[in-house]
Picture 1 (tube, rainbow, N blue to C red):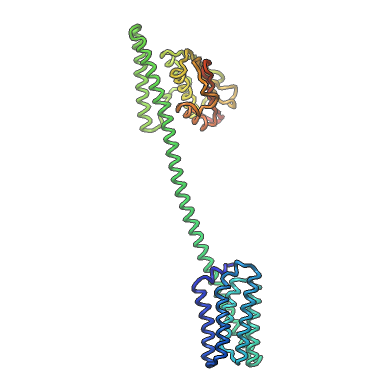
Picture 2 (cartoon, rainbow, N blue to C red):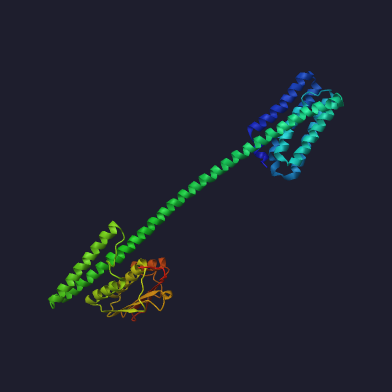
Length: 405
């Protein structure tokens, strides 16, 4: 049901009620002639009727059923007093106009049964007033005419309520749409910022894993060449050639990153060949690496392959730069079945550290990036290290049966 406050607070509702009551009184006075006693009584009761209708009726929807009963009882009482005054002065006039605002309010405030009760009671009062002034013979025709007018008021009020309801609903939907658009715009900005942040993180990780490791290998080869410069010219040339290749690989990685951000770090090699080359490169630079493969080999997805290769690079780089290791073990384990996943282990005999106890989030950027890669593939990255006892980096990744190379 439409809230009465929405109907009565409008200037149109106040103007219509005031106009109907005022015109009813004015026409009655003009038709009856000036009678100070009648004008005073009718004027006071009309003013009370209008004021109660305008200012009390608009708040009834907030006060419950009892307030509504009190309101319509008061209005019906004022209408009965007006009928009594009109009867005392032998005036019928336009008393029926006072009936119309009451019927409209009943339609807006009450259920159909309540509206019918108010309409029947008001019509009964008017017909009794008419019969007192004239005769009961005039009642049927007057009742038909007044019932028709009452039905018109009810239908008109219903149309007005529906139009008001439709307008309020349209405003509500418009407000919800504006709010939804605002939120959607905010979500779009957040999604764009998140995508940009993820892309920056991915680019930083790719640059570190590609260019960073190439430069590290270049540094190692140059150190080896410098150490053998005066003793072994042949080995020096070999180290310099490998350094040149490392520099070329780094330059290619930068070009690929700038152009497509999808550089292939394996350069078309399979994982075993890439890991074997990485082990040989480290060994030629002065850090012996023993590379072993366990379990039955099977195809791996490109994402798993890349992450395993990056983990081997990170482990070998850390062993050379930080651990001051003498030997490194690089192991790739396929497990007994595909459900076991694939595990890469890089273990060195370096100085170790107390900074790690299984968590990689406290490490350098390389370990953080490697941890992010493992998390994206639902894998696990673990780094164990103790002072004087070396370090062991373990990466385990799931390998679903549907993965293909």
